[in-house]
Image (cartoon, rainbow, N blue to C red):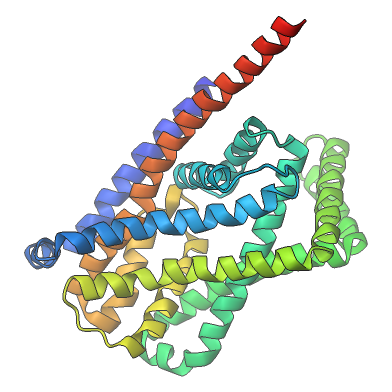
Length: 353
């Protein structure tokens, strides 16, 4: 427990340091102009921008609530939103999404869903989200590839590498699902090789663990294949979720007085999705520092450096920092609330006995 707490504190410090570094990068040449753009914004625009990031998290929670109902009929929309915010918080303070998923499984258990079912639920959510995201970004690439190449030039090659990494992840997942025996053979060879190199200490234990995870994953894929209505619903909600996330910079630009025409909305959505692709290179908590830098570099080609820095500050505050703070509060509340409910239920059972 002490080591976990120490790691979280260290991650917080890393986030703070990298955020300060990113802000310095964004403001070093034009801090006065950036602050002037932001300070001249109407207060209701600021409220809308901050609410936008929360709305994105609420939509993400809606997907979890749909999957949750498959395992617990009375699982509510509110519980899905709670779980999504907790996941956002822990994903934001750990170098990968796995930290968020462990926390979500813990909260699912508190909410009355078994850990094994919670793991299956999170697999389903990840598969649908990742597949939807890659299809979404692929369409954006195909629609305007030549324009983006002329706009951001060599940076697009970096984005393409990130795109291939993400595509590789979803490709491996579907290969595991469709051809489990082939994956089992390759994973067995990989573990044996790693054992010979003394990287894997307990070969049999590792093989058994990988085999168990593959079995759970393929079972979940088979369940999903029979839930066509659920897949359609969750794919549609994820499209809305991604559009909200990627369209926010356009809203911010209009809020601070940058006259982007409506036909530029698609290009803004594309550039925002490219920032997500670039995150594949940033294995640090919340992808802090790198995300901000990539955002400014990409959007500077469209709106200029000062405007891109201004948009980035508000975008990151809405979709990351605010959601992190709310997620931390929700996690503390969930622990207290569900622990109290469990204690009350046990007390009632003792009184009956």
